[in-house]
Length: 62
Figure (cartoon, helix red, strand yellow):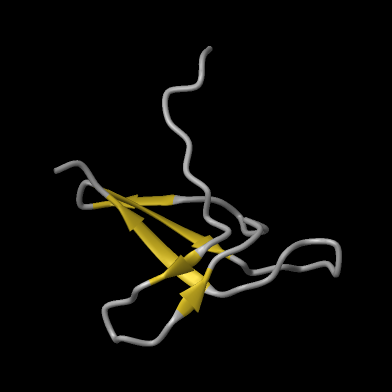
């Protein structure tokens, strides 16, 4: 296959509750698709070698 899209999650994000958030390594079980959106947790580092943070991202098509 070929790469269709990529997104750098290791960055600062504005959030819906106005609390600053920073993503990082994606060390979770994977993305979830619900209602036409893709949800992925970023920054949930399970090892000291992974970059930390803590943000839940929702992607959709406009």
